[in-house]
Figure 1 (cartoon, rainbow, N blue to C red):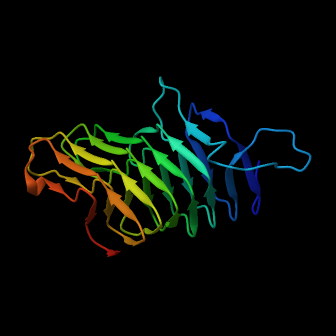
Figure 2: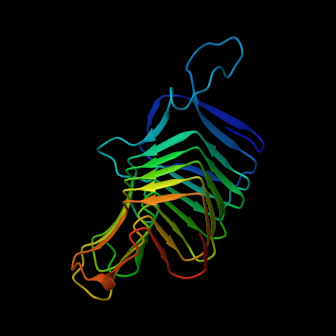
Figure 3: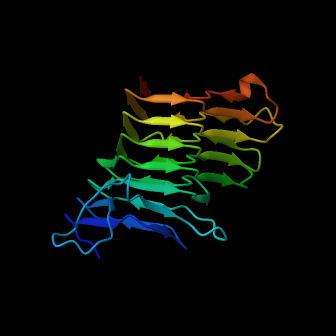
Length: 239
C-alpha cells in the first residue's frame, strides 16, 4: 500500500475494475501512468502516455464509477485515461469529495456516464464530480463524450464536469467536447443544464476549448435546456 508522499507508477496497460478504486485519507500521493512494461535497468523505465496509455475502465457486465477520492490532500493523477465508467449516482468516471489541492494532469476522461432513477433531486458530473471542499486543478486534460442522464424527473447537470457549491475548480489548457446532459422528462420542473460544465461553486477556465457539447431536454423547450457548453448555477465563474 502507498504511504503519504509516495509516487505510484503504472504501466501502459488496460485495467478493468470490478469495483471502483477507493482513495481516502492520504496526503502527497501521485499516481502516474504511461510507462513501458519493460525490465529496464533503471526503473521505472521509459514513459510516454501517448505510446503506452494507462487505461482505467470496467468490464461490460459491471456498472460502476472508476475512482472515488475522499479527504485526499495534495493528490495527483498524471497521464491516466478513465473511460467507460457507468455510475448510478454522481460522478460517472471520478468523484472527488473534500480533496484540497488535487491535481489532474494530462489525463483523458472519456465516455463515462452518471445516471439516476431517483424520483427527486439531480444527477451531476458524467465525467467528473467535485463536491465538499474539493479544490481541483485540471491541466492539459481531455473530457469528451461523457454524459449525465436522468431516468426520472430530476435535473441533469454537467455532462463533462460538475462543480458543487463548496468546491473549486481550475481548468488550464483543457478540451471539453461532445459531452452531454440529457433529461428525458416531459416535466417543466426539471432541466438539462451544462452539457460540458455545470458550476455551482467557484470555477476558473484558462485557455480552454469547449466545443460541440449539448444540454438536451425531451421537450426540446429552450428554457429547459440551459447551457450546451457551460451553465452557471451560482457561485463564481471566470472565463
